[in-house]
Amino acid sequence: MSAIDGGTVVVTGASSGIGREIARQLAPRAGKLVLVARRVERLEALSTELRAMRDGLEVVLLPCDLGDRAATLALVETLRAREIEVDVLINNAGVGDMGVFDRASLDKTLAMIELNVVSLTILTHAVLPGMVARGKGGVLNVSSGFGMSIMPGFAAYIATKHYVSGLSEALVADLAGTGVTMTQVCPGPVATEFEENLGNFTGQKAPGLVEITAERCARSAIRGFDRGRALVVPGIIMSLVLWINHWSPRFSRRLFSRLLGRVLRKKQLAVGA
Ligand SMILES: NC(=O)c1ccc[n+]([C@@H]2O[C@H](COP(=O)([O-])OP(=O)(O)OC[C@H]3O[C@@H](n4cnc5c(N)ncnc54)[C@H](OP(=O)(O)O)[C@@H]3O)[C@@H](O)[C@H]2O)c1
Image 1 (cartoon, rainbow, N blue to C red):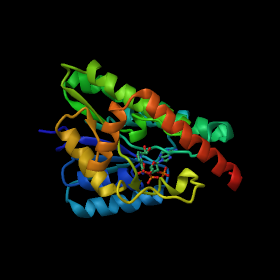
Image 2 (spheres, rainbow, N blue to C red):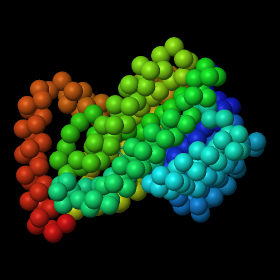
Image 3 (cartoon, protein in one colour):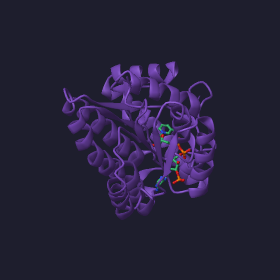
Image 4 (tube, rainbow, N blue to C red):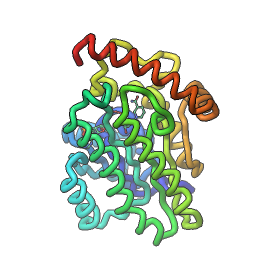
């Protein structure tokens, strides 16, 4: 049986997109859902919706700015103080930033690292000892196709997702034999609010062929977690893209991304972003 069934599941970034869909799909199965994000009214609306889906489902809202280290540490304390024993942690909250690194806002970059990297590390570090002691449970990290590839215009975001992917893969090894699972999901473009917050100045959207819905992404991620998979890439096209990327020589990948980088910089300078 999956640790989700009847278990206590923490979902970060539950107020929108992939996280909200994961919460919806887990409502019929989890015993208790702990929802984390900043927008309280969104969490409250979701809580009402989830409770209506199943009698007896316990929903706990822990609003938190995971970009604020003190707030993340306080969240860990709240989980301890309320004796919330976490069976499954879903590290989903994350933001992106687009543009060449030398023109990026340092504040925005550091805030992204705090959210995508530091808070994920703090939460994972907080829940794993209990899971290992109980010999069950699991962590589902929402990384990105960018966790396994390079593209110009996303340097710091890519670096944060390489951290998430590297940590996740290494934890698969660390946790071997403990009964605790570690799954990372690496989606390509997903239709959520992520794109709006990205600062996309190119005027170009992700090709419809590769973009998937949050509902589909959540379904693949949960299925992969249930099966104890180390890596989940939702969507056939994205799987193919990452497969080609993985097997193509480094020099050709570098050549391609340098060409794209020149085009992107020109575009960014032209629009003054
Ligand atoms: N959409 C894509 O194309 C795509 C592709 C690959 C990977 N991903 C990854 O998927 C994950 C979810 O993104 P999404 O696409 O679902 O985007 P989204 O719709 O923008 O959702 C992001 C979630 O993160 C939460 N969040 C943002 N800043 C936060 C903060 N400081 N503290 C706490 N929560 C915060 C947001 O809640 P509040 O604003 O209410 O705090 C929201 O619930 C991210 O890790 C992203 O990197 C997305």
